[in-house]
Length: 118
Image 1 (tube, rainbow, N blue to C red):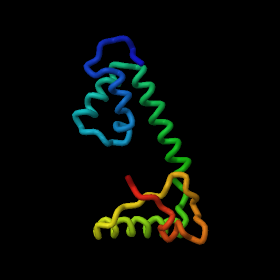
Image 2 (image 1 turned 90 degrees about the horizontal axis):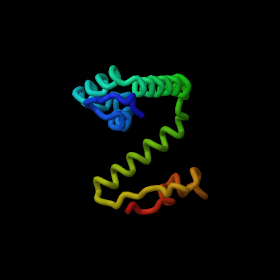
Image 3 (image 1 turned 135 degrees about the vertical axis):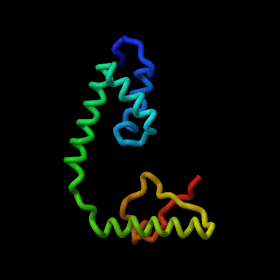
C-alpha cells in the first residue's frame, strides 16, 4: 500500500509497526515518524483510522466481561506455582496446546497434565 509519493519512512515499515503505534508501545521518535507519514500518505492514514476504529469497537464490546473468580484464582495459582518452580530450579512445564481445559480426575488442575518445555 502506498500513495505513490516518496516518503522518509516506507509504507511497509509504517504498516509493520502500526499496532505498536496504536498500543503506545513505540519510542516517541518512532511515533513522530509515523505521524509524519500519516500526514503525507492518505492510504496509510486510512488504514490507521480503520485499525483504530476496530480496536475501539473491540474494547467497547469485550471490555465489560468479568473474569469468573474461580478461573482467576486457578490462573493466579498456576502462575505462582510456575514462579516457585523457577526460583527452586525445577524445570518449567507448559500445558500442551491441545490439552483439555478440565483434565480427568483433576490432573490438569494439579499441574500433572503438562509436558516439559523444550
